[in-house]
Image (tube, rainbow, N blue to C red; front, side, top):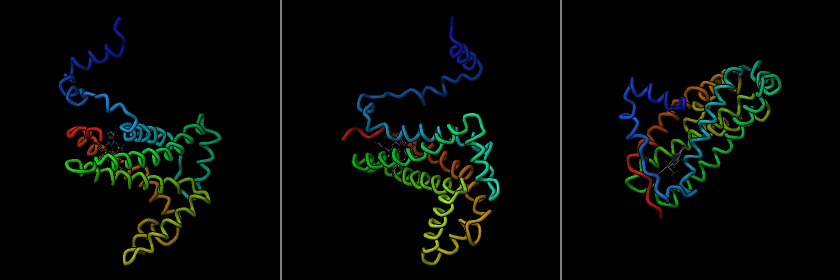
Length: 220
Ligand code: HEM
């Protein structure tokens, strides 16, 4: 008896002729050298990003982006919501792992010389992806609205304010005024769950498109 997945794919195939669209995207040769660990760090980063998006959507159902509600909603997620502690823990630790995997990926790409033409734009898109990873961490840190998050943000926005000429404007833009207060939580929340994910998805599409068009650089 045909499995439900093959039944489903036959059903979709009859209606939309998906094979024609998907074959050029999915049909790629995975040569022996691509199966080495050094080629896996970009993919590991991507897998972790998918985990972050899924667990982040779950957290967003309960999180309250306000001075009064933020910390309480975090406590509620951890203590009251079924498996909330686990989902929150995965979101928290996967964010640290992303920094590790993306750093290793960057170093490996650099030492393999894979940033050289014709892959320089893949590298440039990667630099923006790296900055986005840091921006996710920075904005996410404040959302718990505990002492650690508050002071880390004060230090971050304080450093931004030291930039010559634009420093003060940048600090006001990041904080939504003087001081880390209610407008700051809203700004960081909107950045963390809307603006940064849109930029991330756009850049990932560009990154993957270039990698698929050019292929991964041959080993050393
Ligand atoms: C969100 C973060 C990122 C994801 C999900 C990601 C994903 C990937 C994947 C899956 C590959 C193909 C396999 C591999 O070499 O691992 C790749 C290749 C590449 N990545 Fe990234 N990447 C990210 C960040 C970066 C960063 C920060 C840089 C550099 C600044 C970068 C530069 C490159 C380059 C140049 C290649 C081509 C490597 C080659 O042809 O050998 N990527 N990336």
